[in-house]
Length: 191
Length: 239
Image (cartoon, rainbow over all chains, first blue to last red; front, side, top):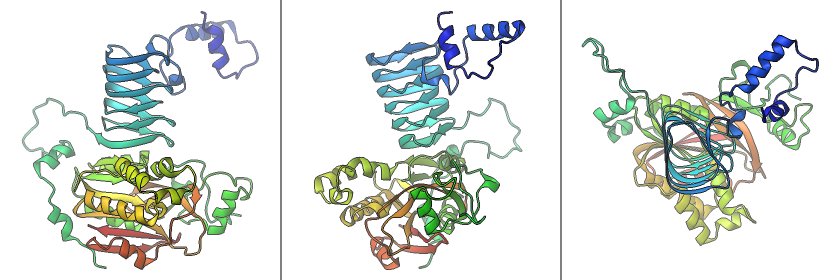
């Protein structure tokens, strides 16, 4: 209710004519409902999400069992194992992070583990190693570190013996057959 | 202006398909675009795809063996991350050009690189890797912007960080008299195709001919050159 005017300001003004009553009611209902976090709304803490503001400084450990928006300074560890962590544009984190999904708009110095995906936005700065199921990097984001894409764990299904073992992750395959430098040297080009 | 030979893109798009031609812009066309006099769309960034023998050779060596560690010195990009990790490799990313600007960008860029303390700090921060850590290094064209003493130290560090038998891909502009040369974002479209997106124009530290490149990598086992249509020398170096 109190935020209705603000939402109306930020919404694209495409219709100057008054909407029919039924449509207007639907729009009002939609405006009252909490919108799912999207790329456009990620700059501000979405309603219904736990938020830590930009003037807050935390040293220690955060463990959240709901979506978390973090826009302050943080030193330590952040764990949001089953939910989404959004690191706001003013955030400065020197922390290791573990979450289901991580969206970075600010600065992070530390390792990040996102079981589902990590999203580095245009002005994000991340120095550290990433271990994730998927990654999205916008042009302009600064990243320094290693990226380890972890494929989903295989389903606990007993497979027939006739199926070859190629479905396992490449890392498991690499561990089973270590890389030999002599293989690389075999195809040495001539000058 | 464009004569139907190539089309500028408004954003990097490896999957651009028909919107990206395989003919690079001429030097004059590139300079006109940088000046903003390239016609109605003159201020838009330029991108084009082309075949790359260098990238083909590089990935020929590593494609069959998953789980390798690749160092990319041009910064993280969606296309390169997707391509390399889809091969099953692990990627280490560092934007060396941006790190150079941060370390030496205040004042005379090349004179600052000659200060021993600043050079040492840069090497410790940006090229501090364990010995024999990487199976491949994508250096692209960033080595052109290092002053000679710092370049020698950087190559020595990269050499140490590479495993024996591993490969390094570097690019050097072949225009001897150029005051400034275009800097690109290099996006891997597939195992033999690159998308080059114009990033900026800047002055190189020195001009490299084939002999200069051979001297630079004289401690390596082999150096192989490919001259491209857009006046770039693609160099594959075998550790």
